[in-house]
Image (tube, rainbow, N blue to C red; front, side, top):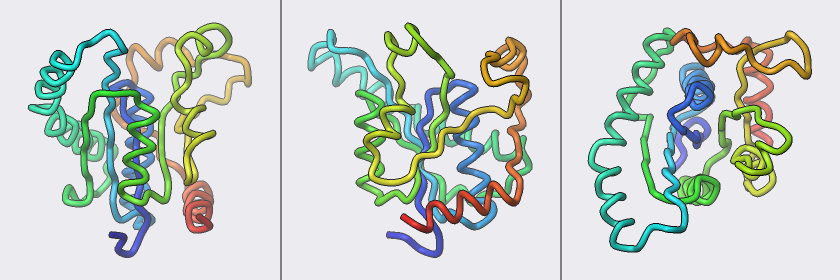
Length: 189
């Protein structure tokens, strides 16, 4: 049920890019554009795990992961000075294919916007690994925001190694114009 705001689904893979996606969602929650934030972690174990092994893995994953995710979201909010109501942040951990699990959660909660980070792979690496962000942009039934770090060095320059090695805990604050654009985009949906 939606109450005064948009419902967001955020994909999280426990990477710095996942942090970027969570921070974008927290910013929209803090400024009142969003009323609920669903952070989803999908652990893909591949196709070579049997059904009984899958049930055991899922039980282990569900034992502590949602609480750890909630603590991490709270930590990111505090480190970024973003006020948030923990009751409006919901964490979900599942075993399965990330794209399908994120699409399913978006349908389940009637999401107005999905937010995902991107590794920024290209060429063979993207072809081999696939791109969750790209697949969601193609398949989602709501707008998808792909969160990337701000780095205006050049269109073809990769992110600096320091981004991955010693990234500060604080996220980049989006400005009022960007926030208004995102609010307008998800209001159209």
